[in-house]
Length: 408
Image (cartoon, rainbow, N blue to C red; front, side, top):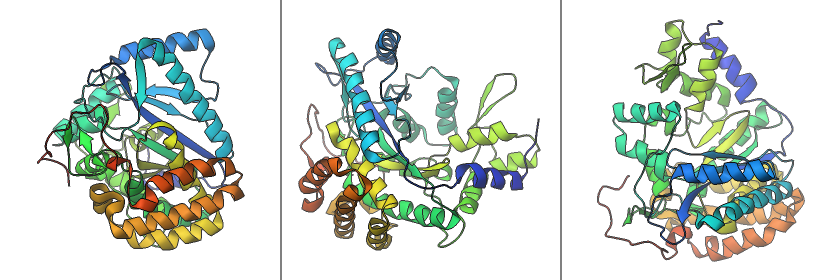
C-alpha cells in the first residue's frame, strides 16, 4: 500500500479538495428532526423512520429529485441533494424530495421539524455504525462528552455547497468570502435559542455547541489574507488529532492519541486514511472539491431554501460578491456575537441587510427570479427588523429558566 508524505497530503488537497472549474453548480444538505406530531417531546425510534423510508424506496423508488437520505446519530434525517447547474433546478428537486419524505412519514403520525438544536428532547444516541460509536468515544476521551453528544444527537443544519472557483485566484477569493460571511449567516439564520426545554442565552445554541467542541477540528480554518487556501487546509488537517482508524482487519479504533502529522511520521497512513481523516474535520467552511458551508441552523418549513439562495448569489454573482465582501469583512471575526445576539448585534445586522439586498438583486441574473419572493419574505420578516427565527415564540416547547451552563 502507498504510504503518504506531507507533500502527498498537500498534492491531494490541492488537486481534490480545491479542484477548480467554472462556478455555477450548487447543492444543499438539509437536516431535520423527526418528531411525533401528537407528542413532540417523545423520542422517535430511528429504526422506525428507516423502516418507513426503506419500504417507500422499495415500493416507489428513491426520491425523484435524486437526493440521498441518510441519518445522523440521534436519528436526524438528512436529505443531501444532487449537484445542480443552478438554484432553480436545485430548489425544485430538493423541495420535491422533502415533500416526498413528509408524505411518507405523515401516515405514521411523524413530521419533520426544522430547528438548529432539538428544543425539547435530550440527546439519545441511536446510531448503529461503529464509526459513530468511535466518534462518541473520541469526544469522551478528549474531554468533550456533553458537547460531543449534543452535536451528534441534538443539532441540525442547512449546509450549502458551491463550487471552489474558476482558478486558484478565484478559489482564494471565494474561500475568503465564504469565511467572512460565516458570522453573518450564523446571525441571520439563528434558530436554536432553546435546548432540551431550557433557554441557553444564545440565539444559535448550535453554533455554541460547535464552538465548545474539539477546537482542532471545528474552529474556522485560519484565513491567510491572500495566501493559498490549500496550504491553510493542509496545515489544519495535519495538526488535527486522528479521530479514529479503520484497520485493514476491519476493526475500528477510536482516538489513537496523535495528530495526522504524527501518524505520517510513523509511515503508516495511506490515501484512504487521509480521505477518511478529512471527513472527520468539521470547520464552518470545508473544502471537498466544492465549498461546504456548515454554519447555518436548520430552518422551519420552506425557509431552508433562503440560505441556499443567498449563499449562491453572493458567491456566484460578481456584483453581489463585491458588495458582500465589503459588508462582511468588518464582521468576519464576530462568531461569538453572532451566536449570542444574532442580528440584534448592530454590526452583524447591517452586514446582513447589505448581503440580503445584494442577493435579492442578483437572483434574477442567476436565473432564480422564482426564489425572490421567498427570500424577500424572509428578509422582511427577520433581517430588515433585526430579528431571526430564534426570536419567534417557541412552539410545542416547555421553556424553563435560562441554563447557567450554556456555551460561550
